[in-house]
Image (cartoon, rainbow, N blue to C red; front, side):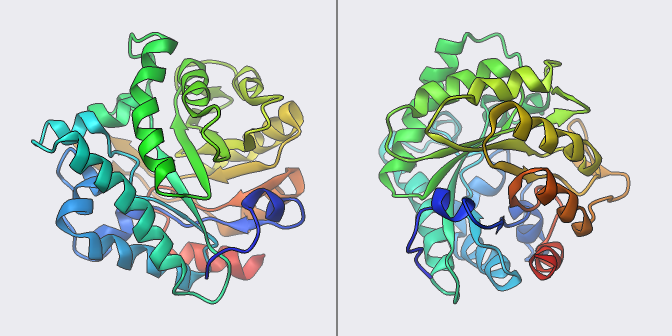
Length: 298
Protein backbone atom coordinates (compact mmCIF):
# COMPACT_ATOMS: atom_id res chain seq x y z
CA UNK A 1 0.00 0.00 0.00
CA UNK A 2 1.43 3.37 -1.06
CA UNK A 3 2.02 5.58 2.03
CA UNK A 4 -0.25 8.60 2.32
CA UNK A 5 1.93 10.43 4.85
CA UNK A 6 5.65 10.93 5.23
CA UNK A 7 7.68 8.60 7.39
CA UNK A 8 8.74 11.56 9.53
CA UNK A 9 5.08 12.34 10.23
CA UNK A 10 4.41 8.73 11.20
CA UNK A 11 7.32 8.73 13.64
CA UNK A 12 5.79 11.67 15.48
CA UNK A 13 3.04 9.50 16.95
CA UNK A 14 3.85 5.83 16.44
CA UNK A 15 6.56 3.17 16.34
CA UNK A 16 7.23 1.82 12.86
CA UNK A 17 8.45 -1.72 12.13
CA UNK A 18 11.39 -2.20 9.78
CA UNK A 19 12.10 -5.39 7.89
CA UNK A 20 14.88 -7.85 8.75
CA UNK A 21 17.96 -9.07 6.97
CA UNK A 22 17.52 -9.27 3.20
CA UNK A 23 20.46 -11.62 2.62
CA UNK A 24 19.27 -14.32 5.00
CA UNK A 25 15.80 -14.31 3.45
CA UNK A 26 17.33 -14.59 -0.03
CA UNK A 27 19.45 -17.52 1.16
CA UNK A 28 16.31 -19.12 2.63
CA UNK A 29 14.84 -18.85 -0.87
CA UNK A 30 17.82 -20.78 -2.24
CA UNK A 31 19.90 -17.88 -3.59
CA UNK A 32 23.70 -18.09 -3.74
CA UNK A 33 25.18 -14.86 -2.34
CA UNK A 34 28.85 -15.85 -2.41
CA UNK A 35 29.57 -13.24 -5.09
CA UNK A 36 31.36 -10.06 -3.93
CA UNK A 37 28.31 -8.06 -5.02
CA UNK A 38 26.31 -10.04 -2.45
CA UNK A 39 22.56 -9.47 -2.80
CA UNK A 40 23.15 -6.64 -5.30
CA UNK A 41 24.00 -9.24 -7.97
CA UNK A 42 20.37 -10.31 -7.98
CA UNK A 43 19.29 -6.88 -9.16
CA UNK A 44 20.50 -8.06 -12.57
CA UNK A 45 20.32 -11.84 -12.28
CA UNK A 46 17.26 -12.47 -10.13
CA UNK A 47 15.10 -9.45 -9.39
CA UNK A 48 12.11 -11.71 -8.78
CA UNK A 49 13.97 -13.19 -5.80
CA UNK A 50 14.46 -9.74 -4.28
CA UNK A 51 10.77 -8.96 -4.80
CA UNK A 52 9.83 -12.22 -3.09
CA UNK A 53 12.10 -11.47 -0.12
CA UNK A 54 10.55 -8.03 0.31
CA UNK A 55 7.07 -9.56 0.10
CA UNK A 56 7.94 -12.03 2.87
CA UNK A 57 8.64 -9.11 5.19
CA UNK A 58 5.47 -7.29 4.18
CA UNK A 59 3.51 -10.41 5.14
CA UNK A 60 5.37 -10.44 8.47
CA UNK A 61 4.18 -6.89 9.17
CA UNK A 62 7.12 -4.73 8.11
CA UNK A 63 6.17 -1.12 7.40
CA UNK A 64 9.56 -0.09 5.97
CA UNK A 65 11.39 -2.07 3.30
CA UNK A 66 15.13 -1.44 2.94
CA UNK A 67 16.31 -1.81 -0.64
CA UNK A 68 18.90 -4.25 -1.97
CA UNK A 69 21.36 -1.45 -2.78
CA UNK A 70 23.58 -1.78 0.31
CA UNK A 71 26.46 -3.24 -1.71
CA UNK A 72 25.38 -1.81 -5.08
CA UNK A 73 27.84 0.81 -6.31
CA UNK A 74 29.02 2.12 -9.65
CA UNK A 75 32.52 0.91 -8.80
CA UNK A 76 31.40 -2.57 -7.81
CA UNK A 77 29.28 -2.99 -10.93
CA UNK A 78 32.14 -1.67 -13.10
CA UNK A 79 34.34 -4.53 -11.92
CA UNK A 80 31.74 -6.85 -13.44
CA UNK A 81 31.69 -4.97 -16.74
CA UNK A 82 28.48 -3.07 -16.02
CA UNK A 83 28.53 0.50 -17.38
CA UNK A 84 27.33 3.55 -15.50
CA UNK A 85 24.01 3.85 -17.30
CA UNK A 86 23.10 0.22 -16.64
CA UNK A 87 24.34 0.49 -13.05
CA UNK A 88 22.12 3.53 -12.47
CA UNK A 89 19.22 1.50 -13.79
CA UNK A 90 19.98 -1.33 -11.37
CA UNK A 91 20.09 1.09 -8.44
CA UNK A 92 16.71 2.45 -9.51
CA UNK A 93 15.41 -1.11 -9.81
CA UNK A 94 16.22 -1.71 -6.13
CA UNK A 95 13.77 1.05 -5.19
CA UNK A 96 11.16 -0.12 -7.69
CA UNK A 97 11.24 -3.71 -6.40
CA UNK A 98 10.70 -2.59 -2.82
CA UNK A 99 7.92 -0.20 -3.86
CA UNK A 100 6.13 -2.93 -5.77
CA UNK A 101 6.31 -5.33 -2.84
CA UNK A 102 5.01 -2.68 -0.46
CA UNK A 103 1.99 -2.00 -2.64
CA UNK A 104 0.98 -5.66 -2.38
CA UNK A 105 0.03 -5.31 1.29
CA UNK A 106 -2.86 -3.69 3.13
CA UNK A 107 -0.89 -1.20 5.25
CA UNK A 108 1.31 1.80 4.56
CA UNK A 109 4.80 0.67 3.54
CA UNK A 110 7.66 3.12 3.12
CA UNK A 111 10.78 2.43 1.04
CA UNK A 112 14.22 3.15 2.49
CA UNK A 113 17.00 3.23 -0.11
CA UNK A 114 20.04 1.60 1.45
CA UNK A 115 23.30 3.54 1.20
CA UNK A 116 25.94 1.24 2.62
CA UNK A 117 29.45 2.34 3.63
CA UNK A 118 32.49 2.50 1.38
CA UNK A 119 33.77 -0.72 2.93
CA UNK A 120 30.78 -2.65 1.60
CA UNK A 121 31.99 -1.94 -1.94
CA UNK A 122 35.42 -3.35 -1.03
CA UNK A 123 33.74 -6.62 0.05
CA UNK A 124 36.54 -7.41 2.50
CA UNK A 125 34.84 -6.79 5.83
CA UNK A 126 36.31 -3.30 6.20
CA UNK A 127 32.87 -1.81 6.83
CA UNK A 128 33.32 -3.31 10.30
CA UNK A 129 36.53 -1.30 10.80
CA UNK A 130 36.17 1.99 8.93
CA UNK A 131 39.15 4.32 8.57
CA UNK A 132 39.84 3.42 4.96
CA UNK A 133 42.52 6.07 4.46
CA UNK A 134 40.17 8.35 2.53
CA UNK A 135 39.36 11.93 3.48
CA UNK A 136 35.82 13.07 4.26
CA UNK A 137 35.79 14.80 0.88
CA UNK A 138 36.95 11.63 -0.86
CA UNK A 139 34.18 9.63 0.78
CA UNK A 140 31.63 12.29 -0.12
CA UNK A 141 32.68 12.08 -3.78
CA UNK A 142 32.27 8.30 -3.67
CA UNK A 143 28.78 8.38 -2.17
CA UNK A 144 27.20 11.27 -4.06
CA UNK A 145 26.59 9.60 -7.48
CA UNK A 146 24.91 6.57 -5.91
CA UNK A 147 22.74 8.77 -3.70
CA UNK A 148 21.71 10.80 -6.75
CA UNK A 149 20.75 7.63 -8.65
CA UNK A 150 18.71 6.29 -5.74
CA UNK A 151 16.96 9.62 -5.11
CA UNK A 152 15.92 9.78 -8.76
CA UNK A 153 13.97 6.54 -8.23
CA UNK A 154 11.78 8.13 -5.56
CA UNK A 155 12.38 6.42 -2.20
CA UNK A 156 10.71 7.76 0.92
CA UNK A 157 13.96 7.95 2.89
CA UNK A 158 17.66 7.20 2.49
CA UNK A 159 19.06 4.69 4.98
CA UNK A 160 22.65 5.80 5.61
CA UNK A 161 23.40 2.56 7.36
CA UNK A 162 26.12 0.41 8.91
CA UNK A 163 28.34 3.50 9.17
CA UNK A 164 31.59 2.57 10.95
CA UNK A 165 32.96 6.00 11.86
CA UNK A 166 32.19 9.70 12.10
CA UNK A 167 34.23 10.63 9.02
CA UNK A 168 31.96 8.55 6.84
CA UNK A 169 28.87 9.85 8.63
CA UNK A 170 29.92 13.42 7.84
CA UNK A 171 30.62 12.45 4.22
CA UNK A 172 27.26 10.73 3.79
CA UNK A 173 25.34 13.66 5.24
CA UNK A 174 27.22 16.07 3.00
CA UNK A 175 26.57 13.89 -0.06
CA UNK A 176 22.84 13.74 0.73
CA UNK A 177 22.46 17.41 1.61
CA UNK A 178 19.79 19.12 -0.45
CA UNK A 179 18.75 15.96 -2.31
CA UNK A 180 15.10 16.43 -1.33
CA UNK A 181 14.77 13.09 0.49
CA UNK A 182 15.01 12.69 4.29
CA UNK A 183 17.63 10.37 5.76
CA UNK A 184 18.30 8.26 8.78
CA UNK A 185 21.84 7.79 10.06
CA UNK A 186 22.69 4.44 11.59
CA UNK A 187 26.07 3.38 12.97
CA UNK A 188 27.52 -0.09 13.32
CA UNK A 189 28.98 -0.29 16.81
CA UNK A 190 30.84 -2.39 19.36
CA UNK A 191 29.91 -1.59 22.93
CA UNK A 192 29.51 2.17 23.32
CA UNK A 193 31.82 3.06 20.44
CA UNK A 194 31.70 3.06 16.67
CA UNK A 195 33.51 0.27 14.88
CA UNK A 196 36.39 2.70 14.40
CA UNK A 197 36.54 3.31 18.15
CA UNK A 198 34.89 6.73 18.51
CA UNK A 199 32.57 7.49 21.40
CA UNK A 200 28.93 7.09 20.46
CA UNK A 201 27.80 10.36 21.98
CA UNK A 202 30.21 12.22 19.68
CA UNK A 203 29.13 10.09 16.73
CA UNK A 204 25.44 10.80 17.24
CA UNK A 205 26.18 14.51 17.64
CA UNK A 206 27.16 14.61 13.95
CA UNK A 207 23.41 14.61 13.15
CA UNK A 208 22.39 17.08 15.85
CA UNK A 209 20.55 20.05 14.38
CA UNK A 210 20.35 18.55 10.89
CA UNK A 211 16.68 18.76 9.88
CA UNK A 212 17.15 16.35 6.97
CA UNK A 213 17.91 13.58 9.49
CA UNK A 214 14.63 12.12 10.74
CA UNK A 215 16.18 9.39 12.91
CA UNK A 216 19.56 8.41 14.37
CA UNK A 217 20.66 5.09 15.78
CA UNK A 218 22.41 1.78 15.22
CA UNK A 219 22.23 -1.35 13.11
CA UNK A 220 24.35 -4.38 12.26
CA UNK A 221 25.46 -4.75 15.89
CA UNK A 222 24.86 -7.12 18.77
CA UNK A 223 21.39 -6.78 20.34
CA UNK A 224 22.87 -6.13 23.79
CA UNK A 225 24.90 -3.19 22.44
CA UNK A 226 21.76 -1.67 20.95
CA UNK A 227 20.13 -1.20 24.35
CA UNK A 228 22.47 1.53 25.61
CA UNK A 229 22.91 3.00 22.14
CA UNK A 230 19.20 3.80 21.87
CA UNK A 231 19.36 5.79 25.11
CA UNK A 232 22.44 7.71 23.94
CA UNK A 233 21.02 8.51 20.51
CA UNK A 234 17.84 9.91 21.99
CA UNK A 235 19.58 11.98 24.67
CA UNK A 236 22.24 13.45 22.35
CA UNK A 237 20.06 14.43 19.38
CA UNK A 238 16.48 14.57 20.65
CA UNK A 239 15.48 12.81 17.41
CA UNK A 240 13.54 9.56 16.96
CA UNK A 241 15.84 6.57 17.22
CA UNK A 242 16.29 3.82 14.65
CA UNK A 243 17.50 0.43 15.87
CA UNK A 244 17.91 -2.82 13.94
CA UNK A 245 20.63 -5.09 15.30
CA UNK A 246 21.88 -8.40 13.96
CA UNK A 247 20.88 -11.78 15.33
CA UNK A 248 23.84 -11.70 17.72
CA UNK A 249 25.92 -14.12 15.66
CA UNK A 250 29.40 -12.99 14.59
CA UNK A 251 30.47 -12.47 10.97
CA UNK A 252 33.81 -14.09 10.07
CA UNK A 253 34.96 -11.93 7.15
CA UNK A 254 37.91 -14.21 6.32
CA UNK A 255 35.79 -17.36 6.02
CA UNK A 256 32.72 -15.36 4.92
CA UNK A 257 30.35 -17.08 7.31
CA UNK A 258 28.47 -16.54 10.55
CA UNK A 259 29.49 -18.18 13.82
CA UNK A 260 28.09 -18.36 17.35
CA UNK A 261 24.52 -18.35 18.56
CA UNK A 262 21.71 -15.85 18.13
CA UNK A 263 20.62 -13.52 20.93
CA UNK A 264 18.04 -11.35 19.14
CA UNK A 265 14.90 -11.12 21.26
CA UNK A 266 11.89 -9.18 19.93
CA UNK A 267 10.82 -8.60 23.54
CA UNK A 268 13.58 -5.97 23.75
CA UNK A 269 11.30 -3.65 21.80
CA UNK A 270 9.54 -2.50 24.96
CA UNK A 271 12.74 -1.07 26.44
CA UNK A 272 13.78 0.38 23.07
CA UNK A 273 10.46 2.20 22.74
CA UNK A 274 10.69 3.54 26.27
CA UNK A 275 14.13 4.95 25.46
CA UNK A 276 13.00 6.71 22.29
CA UNK A 277 13.12 4.13 19.49
CA UNK A 278 10.55 4.79 16.77
CA UNK A 279 12.00 2.66 13.94
CA UNK A 280 12.65 -0.92 15.07
CA UNK A 281 13.59 -4.05 13.16
CA UNK A 282 16.45 -6.41 12.48
CA UNK A 283 19.55 -6.68 10.34
CA UNK A 284 21.64 -9.71 9.34
CA UNK A 285 20.18 -13.11 10.24
CA UNK A 286 16.95 -11.64 11.60
CA UNK A 287 14.13 -13.06 9.52
CA UNK A 288 10.38 -12.72 8.94
CA UNK A 289 9.61 -14.76 12.04
CA UNK A 290 11.25 -12.23 14.34
CA UNK A 291 9.70 -9.31 12.47
CA UNK A 292 6.26 -10.91 12.82
CA UNK A 293 6.83 -11.17 16.56
CA UNK A 294 7.92 -7.52 16.72
CA UNK A 295 4.72 -6.58 14.91
CA UNK A 296 2.65 -8.61 17.36
CA UNK A 297 4.32 -7.01 20.39
CA UNK A 298 3.74 -3.51 19.02
